[in-house]
Length: 72
Image (cartoon, rainbow, N blue to C red; front, side, top):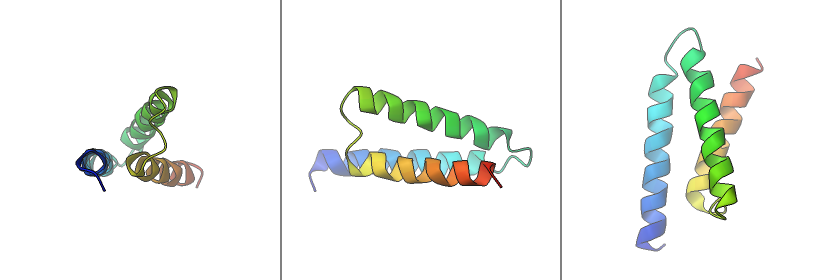
């Protein structure tokens, strides 16, 4: 892995940890907001042709988990 890829993964993991902490809101509002922001970030990354890397895969998996949680 290149240093740039490692940095991308670190940023993605930081975003996931931040989102996880924000999701502790019992109303679920924070989790919905986090999911929305991450989905928008993935859309932007796709537009910039930057959504095919390990960091985007991590965020995409987290968004899928959020969507599953919302549908319970």
